[in-house]
Length: 218
Image 1 (tube, one colour):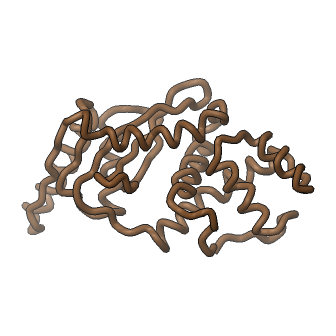
Image 2: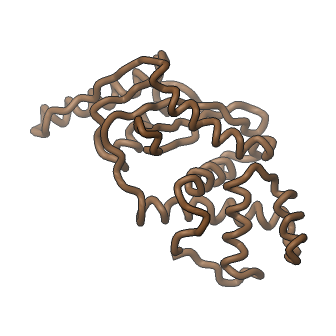
């Protein structure tokens, strides 16, 4: 349950302005102007604080209540986002129908964050029998580390399971096309000022992509 007490605006207005920012190619100042046209005097910094506070909570709420495991074959890749003048890396995975499996923002692009991303995705969506990646050695090493962990669990009495790794770039066209939706939304934002802000906003964008124009119950 999200808490909207002690806010100067009603819950429905706050959620509406948050959704505008997360679902469309708009800046915070754009949101301020659109709200003013509708008789709502809301400073753009207030909308920023709402997005930073509520966006990750909305995504988490949706994940707990509505997100179903995405089994089968996955396509995984990462794209670049500007963070405090430097590049950060958004890891994302979809299935072959384009349904989002999971995502993770990282300041580095090597084996450790790749392994963390795959572990997070597998934990939330169950084991995938095949993960398709490009020629990235870091991503391959990350999955191999997961396979090593699965092998150790088998030695300790678990069920034998290994993830098949496919490094075929053209099969990743689905997830690369999916990146363009994120880039379209983040382009007017002119880069993120903090890692926490970037994480909150990306979580909100992923949330808004998964739901209809009506917010789910909060």
